[in-house]
Image (cartoon, rainbow, N blue to C red):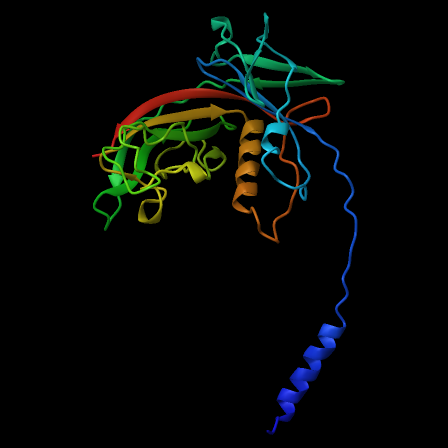
Length: 306
């Protein structure tokens, strides 16, 4: 059997490369845990605060990981400029959230709120405001050309004549499934399509490009990852369809919250990319922790897709 000179050269090159391989071993330094605060207060709603701990990038993930990241037994309170309201810790297993059932601490538009947290040796604080919400001029469903039942929510909006307004959009399909699907969706009849308000990617914006303008824009349907329903993927991904009843939450947010949300969505979109730049998100927590304490001024509406 004859072997060409090119094949022989290739075989020699491969053999040389294999023989030059060297296994490199190194020990990664231990990662110091950092406290992460994610809290918000909305128009007419009580404050909600999650406190967790960071995990190392290369730390193993197992069944105990989720249970060990929540911080319990912290002292958390919210000051509204006049009174200080302690938040109660509500736990389910190892999962904890801090909130209040006092009607006097429901969010008020235009008001400032200070979050205070004491945990271990840390004393954390953060300030936010609930901006006044801006109502939508009109809102409707419009099917896409070529699609008989799928489309987006459209709205007409007028931005106030004050530069620096920031917004974030949420929606929730509140109609229920009319029938079951093949497993694992064989018991969803009567269940609400979306269990929570969902923000699509690109949900936050400032008004640098449209200050004081009136304009129309379309909004896609947000997704809940692994908790999506049986008809949420494929051609229906990101779309609403005829028959849906959609609750809308159009919110006004502070500039710091806008920066936090925009960076969070950028990180989520680049997850797994070798060219992404890792780093902590912008935050407004003072005292040795990261995260964000956000205020949301809320305008609500409902659209029947037809």
